[in-house]
Picture 1 (cartoon, protein in one colour):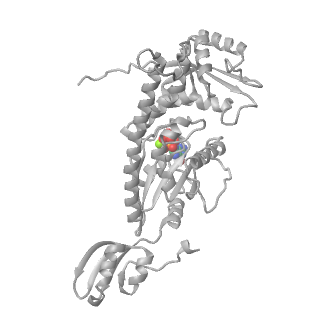
Picture 2 (picture 1 turned 30 degrees about the horizontal axis):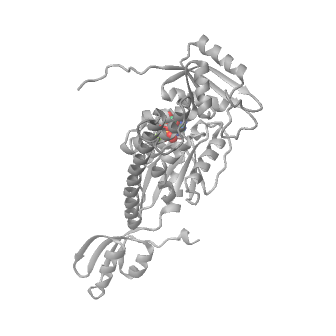
Picture 3 (picture 1 turned 45 degrees about the horizontal axis):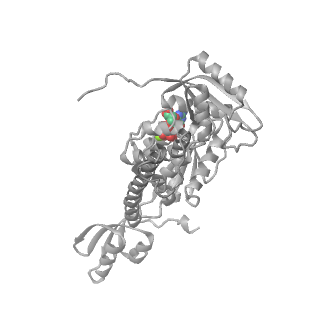
Length: 431
Ligand SMILES: Nc1nc2c(ncn2[C@@H]2O[C@H](COP(=O)(O)OP(=O)(O)OP(=O)(O)O)[C@@H](O)[C@H]2O)c(=O)[nH]1
Ligand SMILES: [Mg+2]
């Protein structure tokens, strides 16, 4: 096999631009903080920032987005710094992107395009790649129009299909076809998932999904809890693929716990749509562990972004447990505490017992490993156990000795025959 001995990828030198305007929504606006985040995204994508321009302006310019004078300033900066890329923190319309590219003479991207590029670089599994490709085509489709807008448009008149149609229409049609095909493939993925989910529901294994802003410490937490061995790096969007592990909360309760892709503000809506197949798991999870990086001064805004995306993905009813992570970096700050909150350091392990306790309280629905001695004249109960519980072994001696994992409801029917493993406890879920 031919092996690459060096990385041929060029390091882009980029100027970052943002516009702060009262008419833009909070999600759409740029400020120093969001530009800093954009710089971190750029670095993740493999570029370096060589200059920053932030303009305060009453309204965006419809043609250039920034003011025309400001665009000249950007152009001078680009030349002085030898930049080969300009990235906008705000979303640009397809035509603004084209006009800016022409005016500045180098490639112009917006934050959505940058995030899409990172996802494309980092997606590993077949499913991840499908999702990213779909998002990229959806992003490209309206932009294709403006790239070719100098060509005459042919509006669906009879006889204009086939030979004689413009390149633009052919390209658009190819891309639409690709989108449809990718959507079908993802639908199949979704179908497989829902079958797996039904199986899990039947076995009644609770599912926990770790969610949170990118770089909050989700993978580090899963590693700490389960030794999953997932990469955890100090960069954005390190994890794109879901990893699921089992976690033993107690002798009687094992749960499935998954790491998921991180969220960020201004996440391209094409990506949210494309990742729905993976993220719909959130809706079916029994609990969402929302990991928040409290060492980040923006943690409140970040937590709001995550909450909003969770709702957008249809999981507003899924129970939450907020995990305030990286508390080892805090110095004497007071944070909200309570039943729904855990103060934690996934790095040092501080707070891990509290987290496990709270998980147990929320999820240990009393799946009990028990041993039973069932009299031969009650043999029907063994059939019932086969139907309603997970029977691990059956031996015929003085009585029928069964080892099984049962819910409290099933246990209620056989409680007088339990010989081992069940201590009735206060059942908090009945509160
Ligand atoms: N000091 C400190 N650092 C932490 C803690 N938890 C995670 N980190 C660090 O934060 C960085 C990000 O951690 P990850 O676990 O990769 O974060 P993530 O949420 O999985 O990030 P993405 O996969 O990129 O969305 C890594 O450098 C971790 O070592 C913590 O409790 N304390
Ligand atoms: Mg991760």
